[in-house]
Length: 159
Image: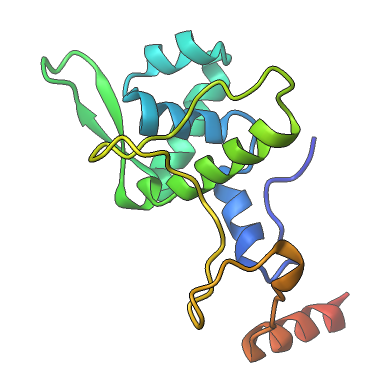
């Protein structure tokens, strides 16, 4: 089994994968975000995920602050509600869906994202804060922060 942590990585993407990178994780978040699911039984029924795996994921999400628990209206069930931290994953879900629509779904787009206010199609694209342009993937470079360079060097020396 693969480890859950990326201890040797000095990378925000790796830290994010530690929270949401396991199987079923993003689908649970997607169902809460876009289909309003909050109950364990609804997630389990819709996704078909084993109950022990679902319980583990939801517990980890609560611990990480992605979800919070609250009693249902009648108090008979616990509900899992996305926090602001969890809702901030919306662009990730949309980006993965757009990629999947283009590269992994031969039958076409199964769902579209629409702006509730006007009904317009919602999509993501990279935007430049400097010029306002939309650079192509080949026109985007990653620049290492000085803290990143220092941490990476420290970790290399420990190996």
